[in-house]
Image (cartoon, rainbow, N blue to C red; front, side):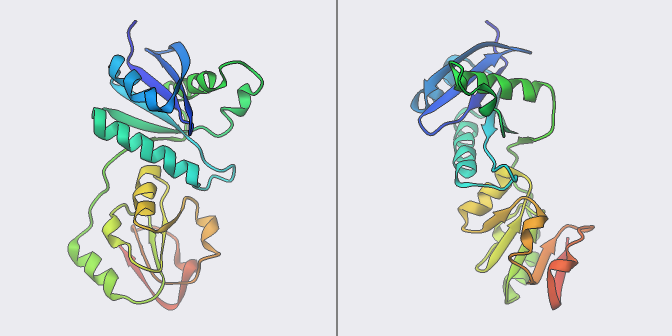
Length: 214
C-alpha cells in the first residue's frame, strides 16, 4: 500500500489515523503512545494533525497540547507537518463506530482538498536585534501583532498571531495569544504595538502610545 500522507485526529488518550495517497485507504484508532510506531512503519512524506480550536476560533489548552504533539513529530521524523482546523469533525460522526478514525479521514480529505484552515509548521522569521532591544526598553503594556520572533516578548505582553505554530511558541514563553483582533478589546489600550506595515491596529493604542511597524 502506497502511503504519502498520514492524518491524525489527536486525542489525550487515543488518536484516529487515516493514511493513503490521494484518498484515505485505511483508517483506525491507536493509543496515543503508539502513534510514533505508526509513523515509523508507514514512511509518509507528509503528516497532518487535526487542530482543535474553540467554536469562536480562539486558542485553548487542547490547541496548544495538539501543536506540541505536532512539533514532536516534526522534530523526530523531519517530515512536513501541517495543522488542519478540525472544528466539528468529531461531532459529524457521533454515535458511529471508530469515530476517531473517521475524524482522521475527514482531516485527510480537508487537507487534500486544499481548503481553508491549513497551516504548515514553519520556523519563525527573525527581526533585527536592534528592534528587540528597542521594544524591551519601552515600558508599559505591549502588543506583538503578526510577528513570529518570540524574542520580542516580555512581561505584560499580548500576542496577536493567526499562525498556530508561532502562537504556540509565544504561549510557551508565557504570553497570552489571540487569533482574532476582535478579542483584543479586553486587553487594550496598549502602550506600544509592534506589528507589520499595513496593519490597522491604531484603535488599540493608548493616547500618546507608540506604534512600531516593521
